Image (cartoon, rainbow, N blue to C red; front, side):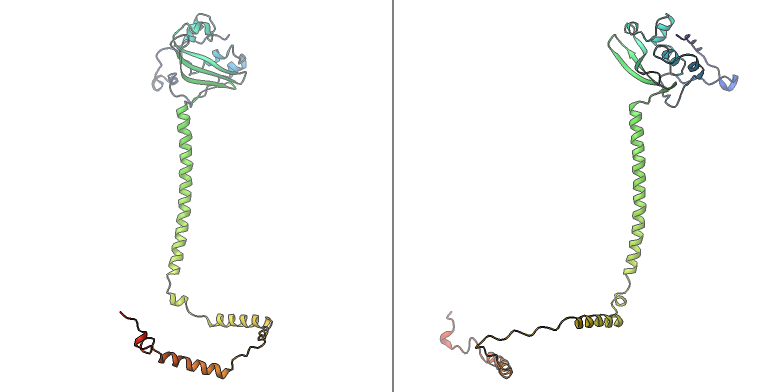
Length: 253
């Protein structure tokens, strides 16, 4: 097992006065933007489930006030569950392992042998240590990204609709011209249509003759038709349906 790192001093110097490095963030705060990697340690020791906790203890994510540190001081493996279950307070537990690429640590608060409350999650991916974002932050990021794309789509659609409205306005202004100018007759076009209709009529076959009259039917002559047409309106005009029927045919009231 690797040597237990020394506990950092309680007070840190002012970097503006003595040139010392800035103190790392307090463990437990949002450090999702921090990545820790010690290439010298990785070149010296193998990264497996027995030594991975010592490597994790070198990172700024480690909390020296946890129960695991007390076991390290007593030369007990810091991930020994038989000892951790008898203690109360903050502890780190190795939850998932995929040697040698992935190791997941869960920071939790233990209130009893079977009562623990998860707090934060850290993972080691190919030697680099990260803090996993909380679920609420993941949802907020996904929703924010979706809203961004939706807003961008609406802006694109609005810009296209504005162009369509501009074209429609131009069409309406063009349609608002006097109707008299649009309804003027083009005699050249009229002659052209007449010429096309006449050419089509010449191409059509002649109309067939009418069918013959049935036997015994005598068609009326033209003189008789003219005479009947001239006499029928006069007869209808001289007949009054009430006066000429006489008093006997009138309705009694």
